[in-house]
Length: 285
Image 1: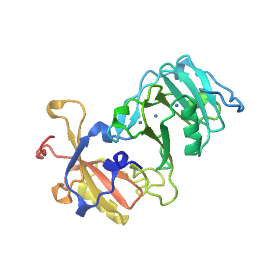
Image 2: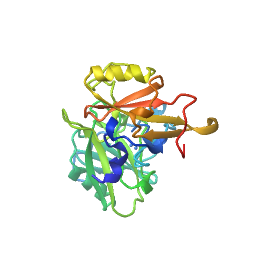
Image 3: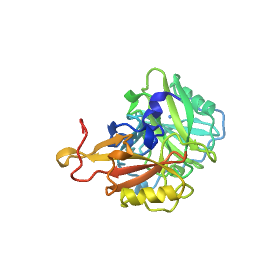
Image 4: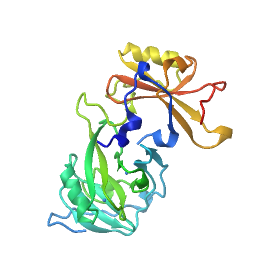
């Protein structure tokens, strides 16, 4: 996989850590594609007006490569259908409905190419089986708005739909699209998941709100290693903030509060920590 995609998601251990920065929006969890094939058409369902949502809070991962954003259901036309994928033309984009729980890259690339996105390649990446929504995006930062999540129950639109996402119709040049697939047992995730989710390393354990000292004690009782990030709020009460990555344990006050615990399914728990009010910000924060 392109190193740019995962460079901010690499495993870090206490002894390897050194300060780095990234935007909070880019780290928040977690980004959502004209030829009709001779395949059985799936029965289409029109969504109830009560299910039409007007917006969804945007989050981004990997410098804008993974995007979740607003989508409004309007008039659309089916332009492609196969056993794995159905595509609608919807304004200036395409809505992809995934109807196969385990599509192959070849099937997805065929769908992209059928609507004129001939230079798009597809890579499936392992994600937590507990992920509720689709995980997807492009490997080019300039395509930050190139993919967005749908905000409706896609099964109301296309029978058998498991997940859906919207892709811009005007993507130019080569681009790699990545789509999450459930990781196999013991397989490392391509990006982090909440460590307290069922089936994860700290399933059912509440870490949020504990002190660092308490959280570390819990993590180590589970024979897991610890890594740290600091979530610095925006200055002067502004929106957003910045995340300092790869923070050494020596820079963490054990009394600071933990906001979340995340995992790559690799034996390391990344504790996201809120610095105390008297903490010294590093340059640029």
